[in-house]
Length: 103
Image 1 (cartoon, rainbow, N blue to C red):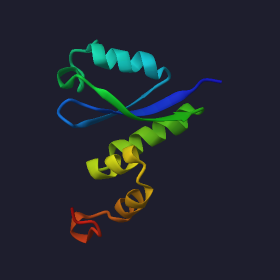
Image 2 (cartoon, rainbow, N blue to C red; image 1 turned 135 degrees about the horizontal axis):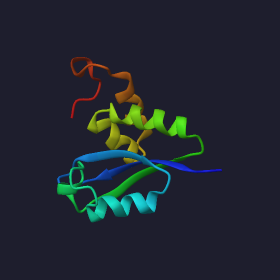
Image 3 (cartoon, one colour; image 1 turned 120 degrees about the vertical axis):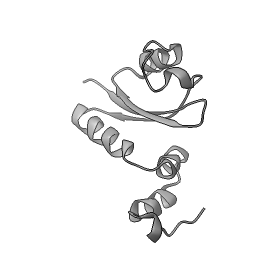
């Protein structure tokens, strides 16, 4: 059975990149080496792998990746740090004017 990974990279400019792969080591090396000159991460190296989640189903991995890509940076940071209480608070808020969390 194949394993699929949804991953988040922290870029040198502190932005976050979310991707999916079936080989996390190879894919991280490709990002870090700048193999794709037109990619988001190419000019934002060095990179740090800050999150990865394994899946056995490619459909589940794709679904999760698409879901994370729509999240705010705050919500992604909560996932990265494992702050599930904050993740729940941020998941409840759909509009910044109604946010329970005020940084």
